[in-house]
Image (cartoon, rainbow, N blue to C red; front, side):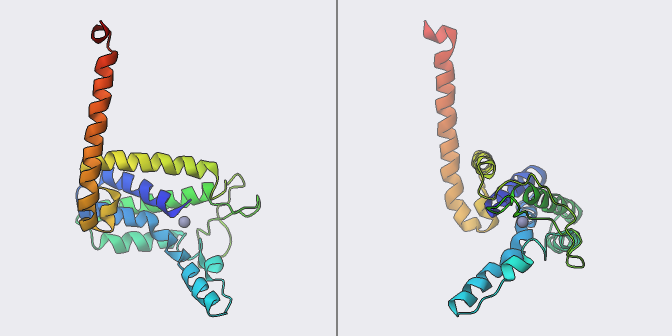
Length: 205
Ligand SMILES: [Zn+2]
């Protein structure tokens, strides 16, 4: 699934289960951490510009961190910075595995046989542990629908909390974004309540 879908899903879980901003941020980061093994795409791009051909993205994405030891390492590392360490470690493991599950469901390439397996025992074994032949395409309609629903939930819940997913990366930027969303939610709620009152039987007389 796309990185932003992982980000939104992790933030929604973190927002509902953590009790302070720092832990919320850490749990959200755990949900996108597996895709750090896809950063080889940057090296591949730079090498291509220099006239060299490398396949770091192909060789290591969905392999270096999409595994059980990656999950333990990421959860343990992030918990070191947490206020509630055990809670963050557990939640980090949960969102990390949700990421793997989402990749298993919807990360296929353009061809029907271009499936992404989960190398759950990597890097000690290249054997795919999980592979779902019904896996849908990365840019398929399923991922688009899920992405739009997650974005809507992130915006609405963020507006209700007065802090958004932007705050995971920059609190300063979130101080600009969040108030806009809060005003939007308040205006939407006013419109909804006025519409409801107008539609009530006594209001139509
Ligand atoms: Zn992934």
